[in-house]
Image (cartoon, helix red, strand yellow):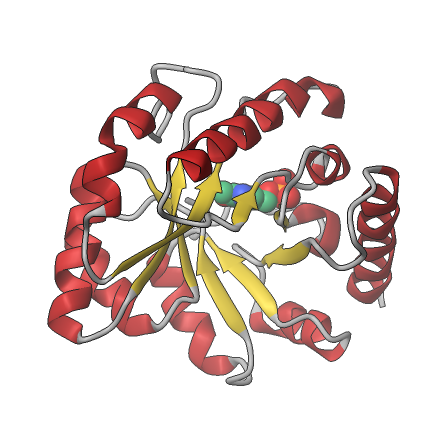
Length: 234
Ligand SMILES: *Cc1c(COP(=O)(O)O)cnc(C)c1O
């Protein structure tokens, strides 16, 4: 019952944060991040009505997705190598959340064209400008925007970020604000509506909801502590 209790609590917390922020109830989607957890655990969440799941490694996701009922939607939230784009598109993710370069976006666009599908993506933005991190800097997204929006077979649905971990959930608020402000700026430039902002994880999702998240990616708060000794952790 642990997973179902956690899910209920998180959904209540999200609803409370929506209310605090004056946002309509149900504006935020809960992505249950199931990486490293077995299908039995994911089924428990499913039994409680959860349908949206996130995995960060393609290989691991490919093992689990066929085991789960077909009305689940899956997002790939981890880094994607260009030579794995075809596999990822064939796998039928609802959203590739971590497109972190123009070259990767171009690859998704080209291969989606070959497969006759549309690549639904988020652009990952490195909001706190750490050198070591994946993602476009906010400045790069703005500079590359005309090239990005011109790519065919691609639906850029919004932005995502993974801010540097902070002790206090409040510490992530400035990063969430940065992502939201960037989305507003890009919407103003057009032509895309960019409805999705994917931000907030187990310890700071409530702050993310207050700052406008439409997707929160919550793993350990639902499924428990991950075993980092597992070879599956990416
Ligand atoms: C693992 C992961 C999460 C979930 O992290 P928790 O702290 O367990 O909620 C969210 N986003 C990404 C990109 C992840 O890799």
